[in-house]
Amino acid sequence: MKISASIYSNKIQELEELIPELEKHHVDFFHIDCNDDISVFEDIRRIREISDTPIDLHVISPEPGKFFELIEEHQIEMTSFQYENLTEKLIVPESINTKVGMAIVSDTPVTIFEEYVDELSFILFMATTPGESGGDFNKNNFKKIREFRGLFPSIKIHVDGGVNNEVSFILRNMGVFAAVTGSYLMNSHSIGAAMLNLKSDNSESKFSIGDFMLGKDEIPVLNTESLNFVDVLQSIEDYKLGFTILTNGDGRLKGIISNADVRKGLLKNKSDFNNLPLDDMINVNPVCVNETQTVKDLLDIIKSKNFPILFVPVLNDNKEPVGVVKFNNLIKGES
Image (cartoon, rainbow, N blue to C red):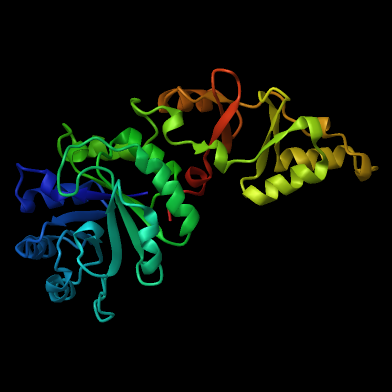
């Protein structure tokens, strides 16, 4: 995941001192909030004189058109426009060579992106109040990010607001392309240490697993009381997650069947595919977590195992499956 440093969160250093320090620690973008203020382009000019790091501009204005020429003149690499401030549909001239995105606040539905899907490159989720620094991440955005990914899988996702080391880990796990961080980065005793924490999996915990897991309505769950091999294959295929969860008649977890379990079951019974016993495929002791456990608990469990983990079923106190945490985005790495 790329890190975009919100430079106006630093109230102490001059740009000529701050920018080289951020570059030294390999920040990917410089995030600049433009709250209907053309004067920010003077700061951009100063940055361009000392750095080639791409600019990530966030325009909050009811008149986006007055910024188009300046965006083109300064060759801004990425520009997002705040949806709630627009008075009419955003139309950015094709002559402006910038990747254009739409920023939305936590209360705005992701479906507003439908009319822009063929025109814009990314969405920016504002997880705190736009233009303000130091707020807490609104956990409702975790579900919105998953919803957006399902509706618009080819559009890159950026997140701004309340991004610390714990939130960064969760966002990386969700496949977010870029995260804007301000107070956490700038108010740290060391920008280098903060950058390292944003890229690592060591974190204190504020959020529970239930805050960001795939919910029960997003995962395959089958009851074993009336089940056959075709049902299992169809469930794995329908959800595209590589596994299905099995429950007993009382709704409690019985086990899981993954692609690997299917392969092993087929090899074990290759002489008679028509009478495959499902019990040969069920992993009745999968690694699981409780929905109230934290990110730190989750990481401690994963690190304690001597085998790779692609997904973890999440249970409630009654041992009923209520969700899943999957790790394919971390395994795929950054793009």
